[in-house]
Length: 248
Image 1 (cartoon, helix red, strand yellow):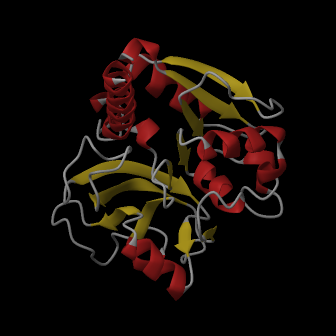
Image 2 (cartoon, helix red, strand yellow):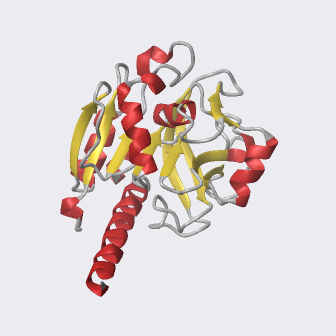
């Protein structure tokens, strides 16, 4: 497998508004084969990466992501994840993944009860994941956030499990010091959590927008490292499989 072979699906729900950002990041910035997939689609066969983008799926009625979890495409996303393939959920996509129980915890109203739209600092907590292998532990990335319900909440037992299994990939920190500080956590998330993965490591959700930080003209290209990590991971896995086939 080469970069040219990788295929990305960008899910579209009624109310998605960052699908075009994700499409641009995947196709134009990363050079991947990329296509939109409507929420009524029940198959994701042939795709290597699935992106659940940000926005306001179904107008965020009931709860953010609560209705989207019942869309036919989410059954396909679950199958995709169960097969060990990569799933990335950004902002509302993170909310949808939590509502669908593909990730633990929930996203609730910001502690300030206000919508936040600003650039934040994110410290990489783990670099051996399919989403952060283009980074080093301790690297501080800059990406924008834009949400009203981005406060990550989980009970103490779940938080302990996330930490034990290395599932917290990103935390909010001061962009200059790389340490938590007053004002560095934009929404009040527990333990300054900005992004987590599942135990298997192939499903990742984060509130900040890597899709809006893929070009220096946007103020930062740090988000590109998330996409580059996925590409590296897929190529490495494919290479290992080829070597095993040759050995047999």
